[in-house]
Length: 332
Image (cartoon, rainbow, N blue to C red; front, side, top):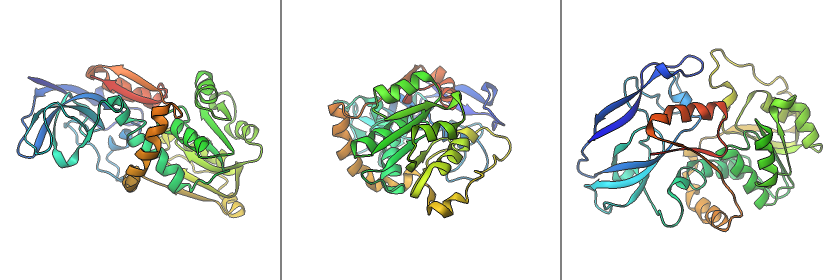
């Protein structure tokens, strides 16, 4: 049996190029003691993966050159040498970018394919959902009545942040997105109070128009001019949770910081970065609260599905371009 897997050949400079990667054929691995062989059904591609393609020191190790890359995946067990896991079980694990993966039992999570579609365990009920939940409620200390601004609001994390804020009593939720179609989606389907296309004008001007009374929380997925605009509209005691800064991921030189940081003194505001890995203690609470919202349809989600392992790289590049609405998923 042949296993197709994506390898990183060279570290991208600026925007990743196809020649930085290769789709390689290898033998399907054999699981050892305490391991299982999983046939992946859905793979996740996420913006943070761009950072792992660089050799720069970060919060997690870079991808190794000439080796298969990693990412979230969910699949079906086809061979098991692990107690408590049977052939036919479905597992969530971190060995994506390949068709088959050998996974240690303790590093995987069993998921119920009957309770929710398998793909949701990579998105709305998975890491991206928990990222939204933890960043809004814990890092940004959301409280009922807060006004919330979300950048990248039509993406997997941003769309969930806005909806959770509304469900928990936000006074106003504003989102930015990169197309008029996405703006319409935010307001008409996800229930945002206002949204704007950041390509249609200056972000700071559009934010002031959408939030004339300022914002109490900014959930940052973009950085750059969005962060500066949010600082300019921050109310007293405002909080900024920095989840990602996709606008600078492909820069070859350091991007300038916000020019108005002194305003944090006036507003007594704070900026705090976070990683979802520091908040897995919230997982049971997250599932118990968000799961019923998803089941009832109160919390809506979208997925952009690309088919075929051969298109995994293009799906990832699409995330960097903002092609996706909701979670970008690769279906095998």
